[in-house]
Amino acid sequence: MNILNCVRLLLIVTSLSPFTLSAQTPSTQEKKALDVPEWAYPGTATRQQVAPPPDFRRASTHFNTPIGLFEGQSDVGSALVPGSARYDTSTKQYTLDSAGYNIWYTRDEFRFLWKKMSGDVSLAADIDFPDPTGYGDRKAVLVIRQDLDDDSKQTLVALHGEGMLQLAQRPEKGLRVKDMEFRVGGRGRPSGKSPDSLVNVMAKRIGIEKRGDEFALFVSLEGEPMHQFGPPIKLKLSEPFYVGLGFCSHLPDKSDTAIFSNVVLENSAGKVH
Image (cartoon, rainbow, N blue to C red; front, side, top):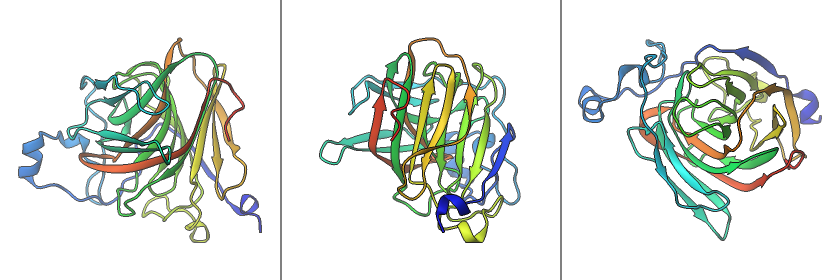
């Protein structure tokens, strides 16, 4: 049976916090050494994740060195463990290493490779997580955002470590992220687990298209041509804006890795493939 005909989607439009999963809790000494605020840790079976304090901000760190298709890179929100990025000219793969409590709520922490652009945009990439044991809500993202501050107005598409797909936006600077979430499989999860029959289905390629003020998620689940998932969202951005690849481990004090390959970046709509 064609996978596109059998995949069941659960669409959730929400501004609630992400699902809670088990996570290793650092020792008191480790917390003190990195000065990790308690709110920055993800939820566990005994602890609910909470939003950052409304007035908490951390300046981003910028590296204006071109990398592949991108003009520069930043540690948006400056996670306590600095990020890094590498580009392999032979394979044309981008490897992003990043800690970061999340890309969510009213502020973000993630490594971001960016290019300033205007007009319509098509961006797509294959995504791989080399470490299969990484935290389930780690996020590899394709981002279009207004600026490089941790609370920027933005829209993004994300592939989570457990397989969830996401189309999200922060509608104005400093506001809480809202999103649409699509569960099509992955490794399964204790909370919001996908049906057992789908646990081996996990998207490998995602894309985002900006067409005027509309932004849409595109997906290929099993190598079929990319197709739009769900309705677009609307967001007005001033030009120029920042377009690129991002990753966060969803852990404030522990880095993880995502690899982006076969990257397509076009200054036009309708070019996601």
